[in-house]
Image 1 (spheres, rainbow, N blue to C red):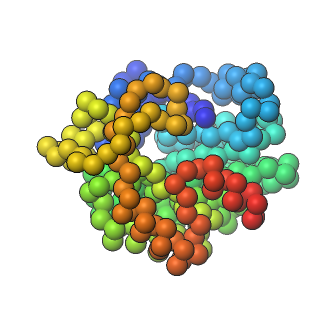
Image 2 (image 1 turned 120 degrees about the horizontal axis):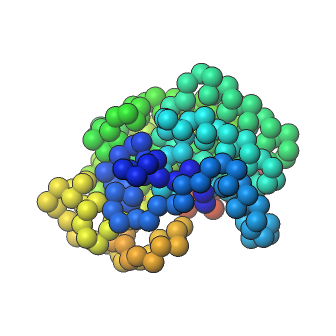
Length: 260
């Protein structure tokens, strides 16, 4: 997993989602330029990874780094690996054209470019505040990703206790014929209560597990909101809609590689 790193010394990301673990005591990824990121990956043993995730601690495609994020996707092609990126960014026409060209380059090399659009809610905009575009705009772009040749993934991440199932029902309805698959995620909450205060106010989670993050090497123990009811809803509703649903990225990637 790589990213362009913290935006600047004042913040990790151009977006300030109150539920995101970077709002708590989460160590930033190194802020490296594209050549340094690609070189670092090139220095890793090739058989230790078969896909690169552009995700992590920031949205590497949000302004003012949209062009740098696209350049990173282009340069990663030299590794000969599939690439998955996650964003809440709604790209302009020229950036979408370039993204389609990049996807075509991957396809010609026998590789896949996975584009994940993140949408966490549809009626609680404070959870995804401006300058993040509306949920509808992001879901429309999911269809654009697919039309441009990307593997289009709807990332409804994380599942939050204050988001009603009716929000998720609406989000899934917009994703039909756009998403190749749907990803959910548990919510990682710092034990100091910063994220709970951001999202829940004075309330605190009553039911949670304690665990480290399986996708990052930080050693902190996090409260983990499992959202069992929401997971069950997605399992049933996605099956009804014909949308493959997964709670982790790796099974989704394996499914798509085997079926598309």
